[in-house]
Image (tube, rainbow, N blue to C red):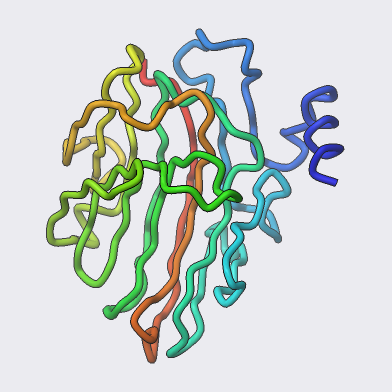
Length: 226
């Protein structure tokens, strides 16, 4: 089934029917504003251009009021999420999300990930996550390399990963207003950028949270850096 869906999307170019817009891969020099992927989550269901992560299926994932909402169950641990159905070359791109609401305090998190083949369960990815008053910036290629700081619901609302056009470095950035961006970490590229899926997820660990609340995302995009 996935093969036929992918074939139809590639041949017919009907991405816009699903609310997620894609600039063809053969247009790497897209002008500023010509985004590769965009989703505002205004549909009644999670967009068909997204695939479900191979998690345990404990987190309820819906779109409500223009938000992508992820709701873990009380006192049960486990992670779930969605990832872009087709991989994308993120060289020279900014991966952006409005991480507008984290989970309630406790052992749980919401996250944005750019990763190699999420269905294979490999450890090759770039990640921003908010967990129990902490915001982390991680790259993993076999082992974790992470730095972080105290999380602020105000100043760390917007997240982005900026992959430079030279393909040599990437940066993690946060913003309070989606206009002025604070550099949180800049690192050499270790996980190749030419074929990554973008994932959004939430979940809990260490037995879960009695009242986990909901994680809310909005205004996802992958757009040129220039």
